[in-house]
Length: 162
View 1 (cartoon, rainbow, N blue to C red):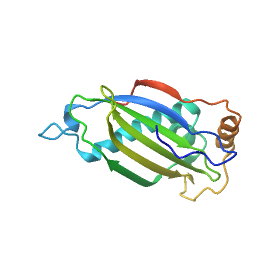
View 2 (view 1 turned 90 degrees about the horizontal axis):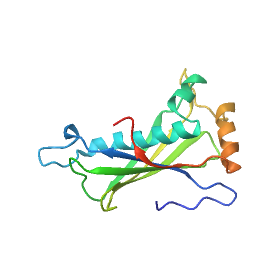
View 3 (view 1 turned 90 degrees about the vertical axis):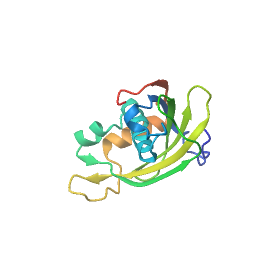
View 4 (view 1 turned 120 degrees about the horizontal axis):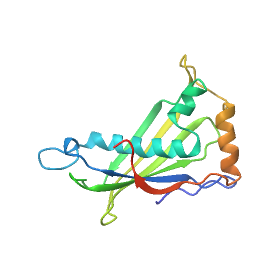
């Protein structure tokens, strides 16, 4: 994955690749994936990465926080088609403030063709919708383990969400 280099003193991004198969309902009459379905593929990869490192939606909810998406950018390079197997790599980047910045690459598995790149930003809020300005203890624990190199990403595997 082509990614920005981490700033000095920051750990490398945490990555995880999820494999999804394009389903019939995700393609149009020409067999091309409708552009809005790419967001689901990003979500699959982000959920898998979060679950592997202790920052899943369930982790946030268990501790009384939400992590709403506040920014999404996608650049489409080539179409995915019905039946394609896609490798969706999510790379979470270290942040000094309580937010999740994740960059993505979507590649066709059979030939490695780059189909799209994307980036999402999530912030933390309380259940009442107040912006969180300091890392909650559970999140800070993950950050400290990340800094010490104790957390790693994972290899490609089928998405449980697809």
